[in-house]
Length: 484
Image (cartoon, rainbow, N blue to C red):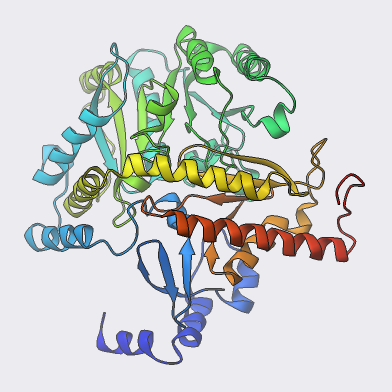
């Protein structure tokens, strides 16, 4: 930071100065742009430590979302900062084109292959590095297309994703994302993308048993494949637990049944582990937790705990062997990024994985996750606005509805979840309202303790009660006769 920048950031008027600069010059993602131009940012964050963030006015907040599901080891870890600094001093950059290599990405690749879940008949073989989960999922589609072209199946290119799934924001990954807000105005999804039913019991299988709901979801998938033709479908992409679409945990038996369908139709399975990977579910990978054996795996966020941008496509041996053969017809593999296999990113990832292992963070995420779900149940089981509490490991969500017995959603114009999140910020907790439903999410750093979880849940319940009273006072919601 330059001297002038330091003075600005540390001055008494820092909040106003930075807020105005941001309002005038920054183009924010997933933001109501006209409103931002009028009002500027609600928070200007200046520092982070552990599970806390601090704004430029000195207010502290518990970050109950670990940023965007990503700062898994917490803020301000010297182990990662030192790894980044040391690597920048030693080798700040080395490209990976034309067989050029550097040490850190090679070591990281080997470590990821050793860690990655796979079937005995289809072990993981190689890692292709990118910069974000979005570009990694874009790469996965190109790998599927290339794979089928090499096999002489140029028509087998369609990708099945799930409604409410989230896979990124590039043209291809946004199309695979099953959230309408990522399609509106962008002419998406492209024709190659198909969507099947989300395994979201509240809205797609209310009152159904696991067995019945799984059977319905499998039948929906089978019908989609039959309509399109299995010979036109190259892959299906799935998050083990769906994140931004609502923290949706499929019913028991779902993944076994879905994998049987895909195997029968020779459709590759891409596991999007961007959120779940590296401990979020209390297992190193979501695939381990839910017995998924994919052909391709996407990783990002937790790979570096977001200290440095890095993603990876982990490729199974059968897919790799086919891609290698493509050189006979297509020449050198024509895909890659300037920052593919960046040495600073790789060094950061290795330090992050070391820290996760040395502090037993995967086990801790499982234990703190169990406590989080216990506290959420205690706080919200009887709440008149709550339709469902769900989660797995250290990721959870509460969905708010206008009616509980026969679920009915609120009018989106009421912005129930965003209002609850805003009220939580007033109470010192940062959560997130998820798109496409009135759901608030919880995905804190793995280092969170019971005291902080208690504070998060207390703030959430208090905020929900406050918003409920406002809705009732405004006549926008009425308490059912059976609720006192």
